Image 1: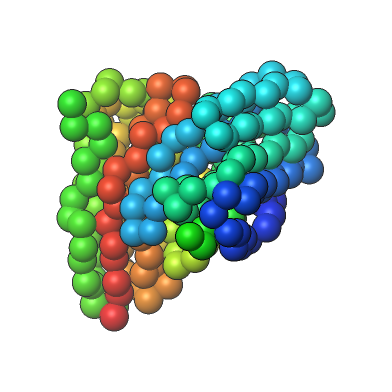
Image 2: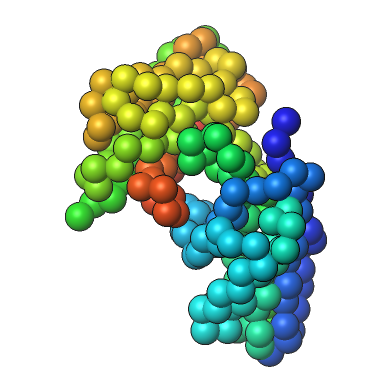
Length: 112
Length: 110
């Protein structure tokens, strides 16, 4: 079935270091979305990427969608303790009426 | 504007019992979804709906049922609860740009 693979599963960084999580699909995606979930909370929508090669920025967060629309990445520059949480990518495919399939998530811990 | 409201927040069920998880949204979104999240794992799609009267199975539908009689409500029914259904359940809605999630129902089956 359709699935997205996300790596790494965990990442521990020192505050101020950069962080990147990667998402990969074996088939072409129609779009990919990114969510953040704090411990004990619910996922919160961050961004949606639709176009091949698209790059979007939100302050220290940079989101990329691959040229083949099969992979995506989220890069955080100079992490802060407020960045702690689990980051999920979620993909949808053509013809699946807005249904999202989530990756396993990357849990980020930031040491002050 | 409440967004997506889920009730109850917590529930303990005995094996074989049934219950309905409630979900309501006030954003007039056509799309609604039910996901489950096991500890330390990602979200698995149980059922989804593209509009009132239309529902379809997701990745893990066994043991669950849904209905969508109105745009606002999308209840999830558990029949004959099993320990494998212990999880956190999230309802979400969408207008085709980003999901809005409810705060979740933490269910334990003992």
